[in-house]
Image 1 (tube, rainbow, N blue to C red):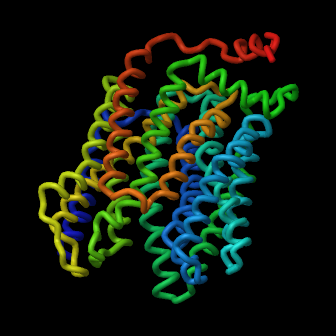
Image 2 (cartoon, rainbow, N blue to C red):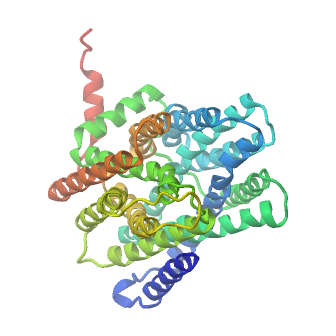
Length: 459
């Protein structure tokens, strides 16, 4: 069965190479040298930021176990991270619109570096502080950088379509190639050089520091709404008004929460799904295979977005439908394939089928990221981009916390079924978004906000 892993990885690698090298002029967008310089600078920074994130992922749980903490205690630490992202991260992310996106990106670097430093302490309270800092950093990673990019891109007068190039390349590199290299580098630090489970966190801090230096030296500041008359509560209310007033923004938020909620749940489920009887599976190699599938997805997305004949709102319906079907495989195999009763050994036939389905899902994830970024750049108002993006993450974080708390309460097939249903609902909502996409964009959501402020409150 070990040959199976190499065949899947090699096959995906060949397809990714074929897709990349077979691109014609129809699949490429002609750009200016000024844009290419701007894009490359952002890609370097984004790749360093993602390296700082990916290096930590595989070793967080392992590090906590080496400190002697139980599964329940580790679960509480993870819940603290997502809870922090929901509460504090939303506030800090919203400040990016008012205080500046560049400043928020630097705050991400500092916060995550401090989180890495806390990993040197075995004390539970210190580790809990690290998870809180990590939750805040995660919110900034997935809002401040994109907000800065969109605002700076528009400020420099680049064509709107060129944004799709930066988005797809950022996912291809940051969520694909960098993830694979980070996994291999972390393995070298921990296993080959025997530097211990804290070494990847130290390496992550170094990459974050380098990225922060580039941001400080080469990025200019931009804002959402720098009005000094607006306090944080007013910003929150303004973002809520924007979401409630524009169906497209509300649909986009629901679609994002449903997909990302399913995606984060999948992260916790794929290992027990592939090794229900404690089969020996190469976790690192499978993770690298997933990232290669994600690279394939982002490469396909760049082709789709480069063509004027294909609309993001249209093809994403297919992506959500395929992703929903791919997560049904664990349920189908449990019904159609006789379960193995042998403990240990290599991956089962059922596991092989599921692995192919999971790779399909990861390819959908690769298409999802640049595509959702493209839609957010079209529909989310600039004045409160970071605030609204963090609003979108509130239901996501609640969902993940609930799943983590009850991960042992339901059979794994029920969890996959729930994710599949969520993805199917996202497909339906995407259909609705496509239908109303051509309606005029909300002209001035801020004016509606002011109208609401002028109305007397009925208490």
